[in-house]
Image 1: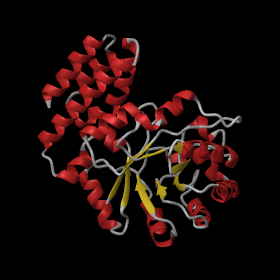
Image 2: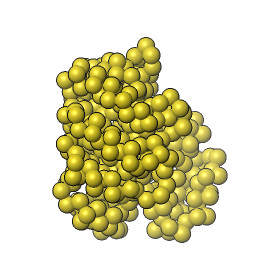
Image 3: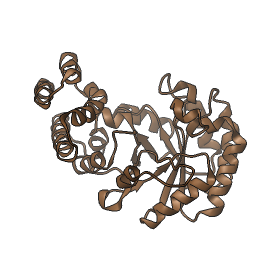
Image 4: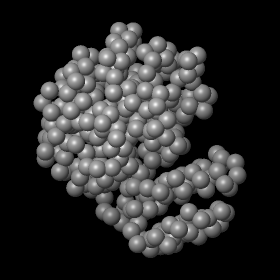
Amino acid sequence: MKYYFAPLEGITNYIFRKIHSIYFPGLDKYFAPFISPNQSKKVMTKEMRDLLPENNEGIYLVPQILTASGGDFVATARKLSSLGYEEVNLNLGCPSGTVVAKNKGSGLLAFPEAVERLLDEIFSRLDMKISVKTRLGMTEGDEFYRLLEIYNQYPMEELIIHPRVREDFYKNNPRTEYFEYAVLESKNPLCYNGNLYTKEDIEKLRKRFPDVERLMCGRGLLTDPGFIWQIQNGGSEVQVCQRIMDFHNTLYQAYREYMSGERNVLFKMKEIWFYMISYFPGNEKAMKKIKKAQRLADYEAAVREVFSFK
């Protein structure tokens, strides 16, 4: 079984990825938060810094590109190839309103012909491994039937399916009946993504789809950064909890060294706790203290309260 870490903009940057891989080794791929080339086909310096090979040593990183332009995708992919990347990912899954309004991400799925033209240009002009991350469609799951016909025309490294439509965002249960259809009909290797939070979730999915050997986890790994490591290594709950504490402390220190100003560090750590607090049930009061913290000293006191409770 191969396990991937899905990207989350603003959180899973190279500092996060590097430290996570130290405390919880064993993931097969990390996917970087998407980069969105503009009309001049340039990528922001901040985005490229996140992808520099020297900032991602020791992990297999897949850059993700968000665009509706084949030319922009090709130009960006070639720049990434010059950095040593052999694989890139096309984002056809992002449900963000600002993205969809530009007919990018899952917004492009409403226009199957545009998806086909985009893939035609990408696969005809690039000699790289290309994977695609997709949702089922914009509003109805049945949109996926036509999309899969299109995807089957191209030799993808893998097709990563989040079986929700754009209008679902991250609500409602994944529409796994459409993933089942893909298992039967896809000509490309499949990866499942969506609502994998626990060992039990993965066992249930593997029982239903025993031939699927690639799983992508995002919010599940942000909630419990060590749950895949625990599956692979059989560590106890105490061991995982200790690693999460050490992971947090190292990440916090790294951000203090990297970022200027307490406010920026606090914002970054609060983003992480939005997910990770679910690993520490019964800590609602401490989480409120984390949210309200305006100084690092207050934040540290609240975090100690959470960890001592566990």
